[in-house]
Length: 158
Ligand code: SME
Image (cartoon, rainbow, N blue to C red; front, side):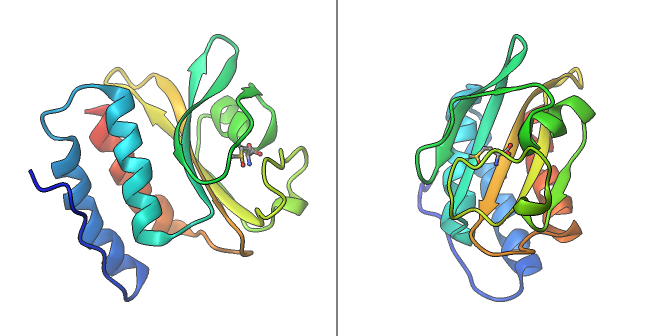
């Protein structure tokens, strides 16, 4: 397997269409969760250049920082706290166009302006963590990101 990612420009739909099969190939044949989450973080960061891309993993009653790309981040988040803890508690994807308008947002980086957080499931449909992506711009994420990112996370759930 070639480890070089092919990065393209253009509309984000095209970027995702180009990236998803490459991520499939990257994780195919590797069953180590951390290794795969690390490569998915790197691939998303490399293609889209967002401020922060990474995973928090469920450990007891907290989310604990997992593989990520970007500035250093808070290590533990309680269930129901911030966007990540809320996505976990509500078991659903949260798109936040303006973090300052989200009550209880945890500002790991003062540069973060908008974000998307998606649940990560295992093969039994149990939530095992979240994918958190932060942008330094307002209104970065929409249903297009949600659709493709959920598709990417399904690769892990299988
Ligand atoms: N923004 C998150 C905290 C994690 S950092 O941004 C990496 C939140 O409010 O859940």
